[in-house]
Length: 324
Image 1: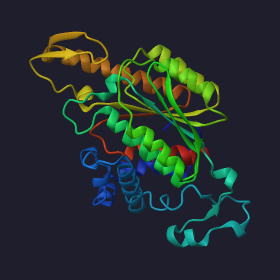
Image 2 (image 1 turned 135 degrees about the vertical axis):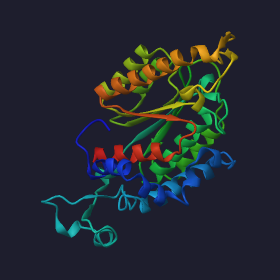
Image 3 (image 1 turned 90 degrees about the vertical axis):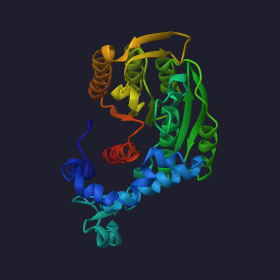
Image 4 (image 1 turned 60 degrees about the horizontal axis):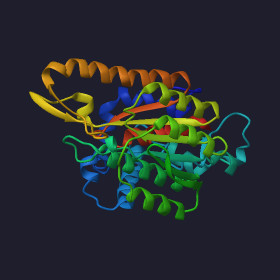
């Protein structure tokens, strides 16, 4: 994690890594809600989002994070000087820890779900979901989670420029509006991430949380400048870098014809001969993104389409805890 001093939740993150068996055991029985291959079988996007969020919260409640799945947007840790009358004794009975009720001004966090519509997002090699479908499910789930916590959330879609924008609201009907747009999106054409980020920096009002869903298969320099601009405007950013499992591991053998999905270019290569060079290049691409993001306190979440959705939801929850 990068950014400001960690909250209690953020301090617990290493425990999840060190005590993996305990966490996996806690997630047993609910992890089916978080696996892309299972979610793919659910046709309706609203049900996908509901299954993912409810599965995540159920697993969180039973995991080493016990206590943070309980009304995490409505409470904060007690600190010396807080009025004792605001301690929530019901939460203390469940967690053994002191929490005080947050005031409305402390709880609201305005978010923008920002979805890349480029043709490359619509590709997969052997996974149940394309990068685009994976990103749509993730965006829908985070929207569901934010509305559940009464946070204003909006949606922005883009290719070479912004194509749709739903202003942030926290009312329950907002989720339906967002899901209606997400469910009808189709990836097509090229993208200009840097230009879209510049437009978003001008569009977003106040200090907001910008959640970007993209494969970021683009020239990094202009993209990084776009991200820097968002931070310069005071926005928090979570960068969900979504790649196909095959793009990460390159499982190809023999002579393979590759086609650029955003152009008519085709190239036949010896997969084995180029594999080492490709893996070095993609690793360098991701490393550069991660390091440059860290320099300006942007949270970078690298994911591939075989990874469960809990990784992204946990990062959102951690980001929220750090803000308050």
